[in-house]
Image 1 (tube, rainbow, N blue to C red):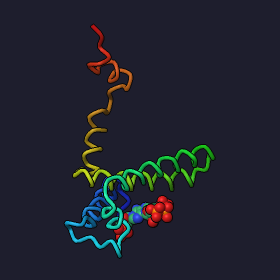
Image 2 (cartoon, protein in one colour):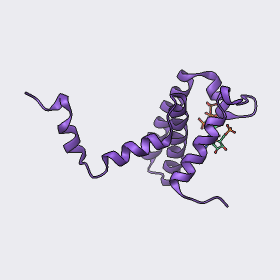
Image 3 (cartoon, rainbow, N blue to C red):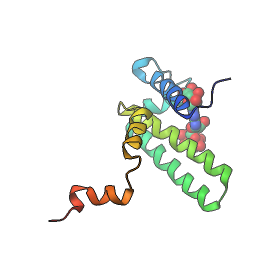
Length: 117
Ligand SMILES: N=c1c2ncn([C@@H]3O[C@H](COP(=O)(O)OP(=O)(O)OP(=O)(O)O)[C@@H](O)[C@H]3O)c2ncn1[C@@H]1O[C@H](COP(=O)(O)O)[C@@H](O)[C@H]1O
């Protein structure tokens, strides 16, 4: 059985997504991801929007199992969007790591547009 380490899971799924790109020989007839790549950026972004909405609806229902299911759909489709732009989960994890320990309120106040003067 494969190990349940979150970074490993994300990296493995990202590698499969990468292998489904047209340039890597992804077959739209045999693969959901290849089919979505073949439809292009707008179709990928539309799925991200749909999955985000489905997550909101699940949360409004307060159904924990559905929230997990829809969050997985959202993360998965976000990973396809990242891949479409040549990015990986590691790029997002690096950004989260950079923000670790920095209060959101402090970070917001430090933004050039919020400094005033
Ligand atoms: N994690 C997922 C995953 N999560 C969700 N989905 C698919 O995402 C699709 C969209 O979900 P929806 O609920 O929106 O279904 P839908 O409304 O019928 O979809 P649309 O026809 O409107 O796009 C469904 O077909 C799900 O099966 C996934 N498909 C694939 N993966 C991973 O991607 C790998 C590669 O998949 P293939 O490219 O299909 O081989 C798999 O081995 C998995 O690890």
